[in-house]
Image 1 (tube, protein in one colour):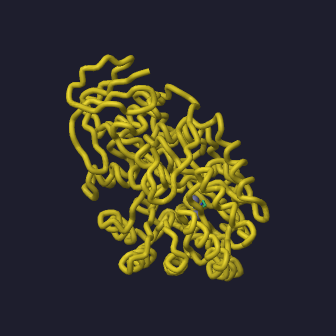
Image 2: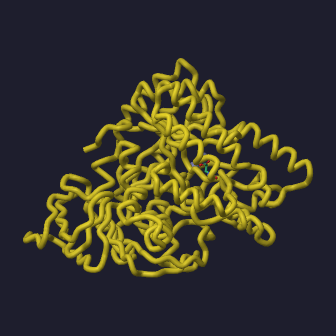
Image 3: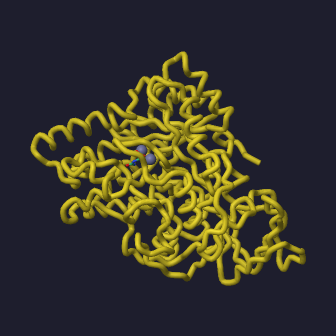
Length: 464
Ligand code: URP
Ligand code: ZN
Ligand code: ZN
C-alpha cells in the first residue's frame, strides 16, 4: 500500500516547507516538491500542516490504582489518542512489590497486545529492587524497556526509599537506561494529610492544600543529587510548579543530565478548580495537584528556554461516577489522576502556538521529537524524514472546536467527564497515519488495532 500526501506544509522540530510525502508500506520513502509518483491513495493536505505523529511519553492505561483501575484500556485509550493526533505512547508497566519486573512486563504486554491502535512502548515502575534482582534491569533493557519510573510519593503503595532509588539509578546508569522520577516528598506530605484529616478537612480541595510546591521542589532537588552521584540520565515527570522548576534549572546549570516534562493541565488549569461546588473538584484530584495560576508563567518560560523539554499527559482517567466517588467521604480516597491523552495536541497548539507562546517547530519538538530522543525512539519516530515510520498527522491549524464530554468530535476517552470541559481551541487533528495506515480520516476512525510494541533503544542511542 502506498500513499501520497500532496500540497501540505511539512513542519518538524527544525524544518518548515511545502512538499509532498510519499509513503510505501510503513515508511516514508520520498519527500519533494510536486512528486511525480503513482500511489494507491492520495491525501490532499492543502491548507493543512503535515506533522510527525504526537508522542505521549506518560500514560497510565488499564492501571490498578487507588482501589480501582484507570478507565481507558489499550483499546479505548489508543483510539482516543489517535483522534487527538498521538501515534505513539509510552505507558507505565507496574512491578508488583516482591515480584519480578519481568512479570510486570508480561502483564502489560497482555494488556496491550491485539488491542492497541497506535504503537506503544513501556516504562517500568519499580516498587522494590533487592540487590540480587538488579540483573533484571539489564534484561529489561534488552527487551526494549530502557526507562523506569520511581516514586518518592504514595508511601505504602508505589513509594521507594532513597537506598532503592540509588540502587536502581546506578544500575540504570550502567545499562544506558533513563530514570523517570515522581519527585514529591510523600513522607512529609502524608504527615500534612494526617493533620488535615484529624481537623476534619476532607473535601477535595484539601488534596491540593496538603501538597506544598516546596515538597515537590525538595523531591526534584534530591533526585537530581542522587542521579548526579549515580551517573544516570534523569527525567522529572509531570513537573507542576515554579519551585520545582527552579531546582531543575539549578541542576542543569551545574551540568547534571536532567530534563523535565510538564503536562497540559499544569500549563492551563489551576487550583481554583478545587473550589468548585460540592464534590466537583474531585475531577482534578491528581498528583502533583493543580497549582496557583501564577506558576503557569514559569512553566511556559521553562518550555521557551528549554528547561522543560517535553509535554506528556499523565493520562490516568477515572470516571466521576463510581470511581472519583470512592472519595466522597475523604479526599484521601479519591483515585489520583485525570484524563487528557486525546486533548494534548490541540490544547498545546492553541495555548502555545496560536497564543504566541511557542513556535510551530517548538510545538512539534515538545509534543513529539524530544520524547522520541529522550526515550530511544528517534529517528524511527518523532520526525518526518526518509526512512522514518510514516506516523503522520494532517493538522488543520484553523479549525475551532469546543472540548466537551458531549462533543463527539472531541471526546473518545472512556471517561464520563472532560478536564477541559467548555474550552474552545483552535487547531485540530484531521487525518492520522500510523506506520503508513490511515487510522483516522477527517476525524473518523478508519482502522482499529494494528498498533505494535516498540522495543526502544537506550538513552542517547538511535532507533532505526
Ligand atoms: O495523579 C496521578 N498523576 N496519577 C497517576 C500516577 C502518577 O503519579 O503519575
Ligand atoms: Zn507520578
Ligand atoms: Zn503518571
